[in-house]
Length: 570
Image (cartoon, rainbow, N blue to C red):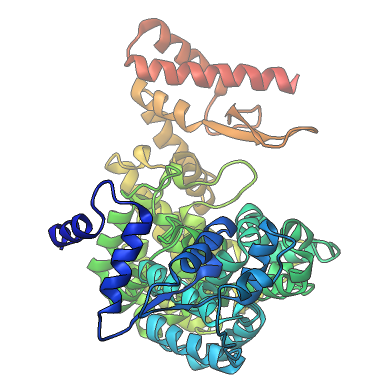
């Protein structure tokens, strides 16, 4: 085809031929044809003013060619505006000199435009669940229909959705996706504002109550939106983001929105705009596979061990993401599968409790706390006290040590009387008798860990020592005797120094973020061993260098923090 086109050009447009001679030659060739040629030029109004005028001039100059007709398709108002921009005095007369006959196509019926898009959405994204139809159609009429002005608008939106949906299919809400794609194409300033004010749009349930008096929450989103579109934009925003409504929602609604993977939930927000799954969310396939195997103990254990080694961009593991996601989908785990699931999970809690997964500053949350949230969610309104007791006594048989002690402590505290609080059985983990069974079980495991050397290596060493004392009937005599024996070893003293070193967070007026400070958890009220003797032993270790340089550095960090604490106390 390229060589044929070149031959044609050489024959009809030889070098040196004038435009007039070329036109005359082409006219003779066309005149001898026994058929007519129709040249169709579409979408002229989508060109710039100069480009559109160039097309009209070209048609005007070539319009005398015989047996050739031109069909120009364009929006007359837009074309007139382009002419008016360059030739104000001409007005509509410019086009009248070129166009011999014009045909006004009737405006499409809005219902036809709507039905065309809805059929395409079903074809691209699949059916909408019956329980979601009302919200889907509310968003469709409030957030999409106002922008479906012509068939071109519909076609453009369909083309965009057919390209972007496959990347996130099944991971986001269809109604939200459709509305946000509409804004991306036809209200880009509002789409950009949604990304800019992400924190406002995805405010948590607790923030709703705080912001109820703020009647101007939507104003920042509308700054660059044309005034004529403000009402439509406001409707869309409130349909997409409940935080922007003048209504307070409970956490129950938040869970429903999370299950639906709506854009108003922070961990799903980025998926809508990056067209890839956020590392704060799990894929639907992952969740479905896990729920299908949730009663398989080995599968549960291996899954959590594997995700503990998967790192996110923020340095944390995937464990918090999985536990939070399971909290949302807890009620989908059948009652008969809860016990084998918890037995498997309880056995690996210590392995998957990682320092990097603990929240910092004024945030709260670590792996054991998330497990507590999950088990409450799993059992509330589904198991009575006797059922929970049987469930937890079985699930804790092979529980990891730190978690067993943590869980037992929570069960015991449910029955400890506090001022102004009465015990509510429906809120207790187990019966009072079973709580004592857990206490005894924890004591036995503590003694076993102490005898085989595992206790001194546990992550929550100090907490476990305190629980040993509290669970015993000898006021800690057994624990202290064991600890005194262990503290004859320098490596144990180093372990204790590290265990007594932590960090705290503080914030003063004018600071926008909390500041981290290393703290020594050793005060005058400390009574596990003699603090003065302990400090002297640490000084001895530093001087004698009986441990590695890394351990010496850790001791020095502790001693420095201890000095700062004494200075602050003074």
